Structure formats: C-alpha cells, structure tokens
Image (tube, rainbow, N blue to C red; front, side, top):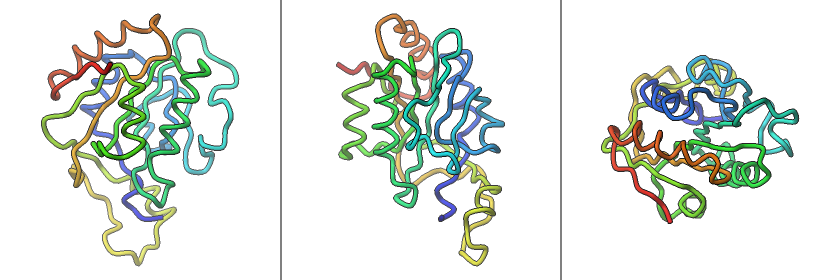
Length: 193
C-alpha cells in the first residue's frame, strides 16, 4: 500500500468539526493513530473495512450519530467513490444522522457529484489544507524500500479540497448553521439545492 494513502487531518479542521458537532460518533476511514486527533467514539480502519460492514453501528448510541470521514483518495484503497456510496447508504438507513466529509475538490468525479447532490452545504477552502502522514500505518503497509515513505508533516495536497455537510433529515438542520459559523472562516460556504 503506498504511503500516500494514510494521512492525518489537520487539527484546525478537526477543531472546526467539533464546533459543528461537539462530538464525533464514528470515523469510518481512519487509523488508531489518526483517531488520537479525531477522537471518534467508534472507528473503522483498513483492517476492519467499513465497506464490508452492513450497518456501521449495530447498537445505536443515544443522541445524534455524527460522522467525520476523510476517505482514502488513492486507487490503491479502492478510491473515494465506494466510501461515499457507503456513507450515503448509512445516512439513508438512519444509522448516521449527520456527516462531515473532507475530500479532494474533484468536481467532475462521479463521487463528487454524489456528494454535491446529497449534501446541505459545501465549503471550498481558500487554500489547500495541510496533512501529516500516518507513519505507523506506513511502516505496517509500505515497503521500506519505497522512496518517500517517511513521515511528512504539514504537506499540502496537489489538489484543492472540499468539505461537505450531509444530514439525514431536517431534524438535524441546526448543524447547517453551526457549519456556516465554523467553516466560513476557512473559505466559501455554499448551500446546495
């Protein structure tokens, strides 16, 4: 597995997510080390893929189920689309009530168009976000002889980013106001219709 598949979300983005949700119930595309930053109650990693699990939370916790997802962008991890499709399925079933998704701003991709059609809001950050490489996963999944596999901190991606807010129904619409308040300092926030 190439090292570019495992990255930490910048802590400034995580702070903004907590301003929207106050807590994160589930992160379906993470690593144990990355979750030290995100602090989701439930996680799925590459070892227990969320893609093969019919229902992400068999026993729903009390309160709204919030999700943060920064899916793999690499084709080596099945690309982004299966993770977007799975999240939409979980929202449709009511397993997840609200989600924030951080992806490349790949507007012509079919998965990006799915997010555009199913989201309440999107933020287009005014600058590319920085990510840190997950060295523990790199050591586990990457050939040590592969060039450039060491820890990289504060590395901006080649592509612009987009941050989406999805909700399962109008009873969770208060998250939209929180999202606008939190993410508008990062870039343009657009309501999707």
